Image (cartoon, rainbow, N blue to C red; front, side, top):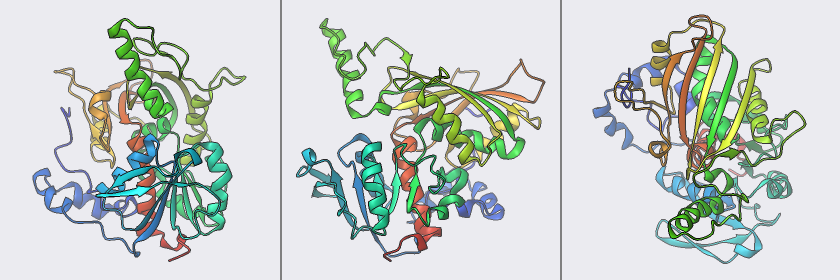
Amino acid sequence: RYPTAPLLCDPPPFLSFTMLRTPSLAKTLRSIPKHNLSVLLSQQRAFSTAPVTVAIAGATGAVGQELLELLDERKFPLKNLKLLASARSAGKQIPFKGENLTVEELTEDSFSDVDIAFFSAGGSQSKEFGPAAGKAGCLVIDNSSAFRMDPKCPLVVPEVNAEAIPDAEDSMIIANPNCSTIIMNTVVWPLHQKANCKRVVVSTYQAASGAGAQAMAELEQQAKDWVAGDPITQDIFGRQYIWNLFSHNSPIEETGYNEEEMKMVKETKKIFSAPDIAVTATCIRVPVLRAHCEAINVTLESPMHEDEALEILSKSPGVTVVDDRENNKFPEPLDASGKDDILVGRMRRDLSQPEGYGLEFFVAGDQIRKGAALNAVQIAEEVLENYPTLLKKL
């Protein structure tokens, strides 16, 4: 069992996921004791390109703000940074690395001097301005659902399918998956590689952040309203959120599934390049600020013991095992908030399936970070390190 984390280190963040697919290198890195890891972590990742000009479309939103933090934190090689948003936000000042940057209005002409653009301004903005940015020779990494199922646009979780990135050569658009899909796939993929997951059943417990900064603010306001005995503010979801759970606020389709659930179904098939994998989901909103949780059940083609599954996950990039039965310590949204890794635990055999062919586990991941901004930045890092020819202006 793993009380808090694996004893040996996970690969340092300055190494690309493509590099980690080299078995000898990955094995060497995972043999380094954690107390020696600080030496490696002090080194800046060496990119094969010159610094690049980056734009953030939707810079004033929750994901846009997280992107700024990550670009600084991960020492992303910036030549210049443009902050873009709607006309009503143009002119705002946003601090970055000791300077105040002025937000510009997002237009089709915003990308003539931009190498990489992170889009997190909503699907309609992505559809309107994403293709224009691509035609201007700018590589778009889009956080909306606009291009996820477009066959010309790769849908990428770097820990899973970084090798799909060059498929953006024509469209110049790489799609960031749905937050719940990213969190699930980062953990399921290592098990799938070993034992081939035939079926995945997932129930999600999704935080306010998935509906944006205003939803987070409303959850906090509802707590204040409840304490003060005031009427509960219900502007975003049209219902009380605090002390309540409700079905995900996306439209219900004819099948009875909502759009969020179907995103997890369709996107997993594309990311895994596994059209036959069976996925079913139930997505629920819970009164948590920024970390999603998921209860996941997998059916395997090859048998796998729960301890073997934990061992595999303890060595997988982007994953931290938290599985302490004695102290009832497992993944929690508070512990996952602000963290890069997805926490996984409650690993156990599914007693309803033949022994070894079914596993149950629970995960928690920061929706704004790995569920959106971090995944996008990791994609950009992979481009700089392994696919620089996608950057047309360099």
